[in-house]
Image (cartoon, rainbow, N blue to C red):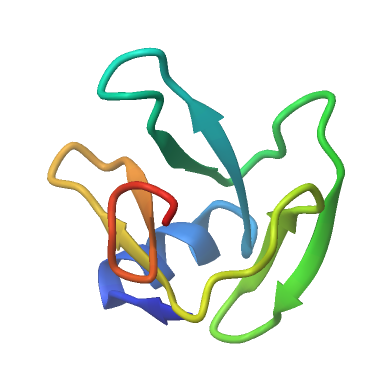
Length: 89
């Protein structure tokens, strides 16, 4: 996992855990994007994939990427990127 300092601070301030899952969209040829939050998505199962610099839990229905990038947007939203991409490849 590669996380910006701002993202690490935001996750730690919100309890030290980040949950990541996929979300499919109908536009753009059915792309699949990542969603990230400091609270788990209801109805999903997650597994622990990293414990430093914070606890990272990935939805069990997906395989882990080679690299998961986590950043904090200017608006304070946590964003996860699959192997550096905004969509799952």
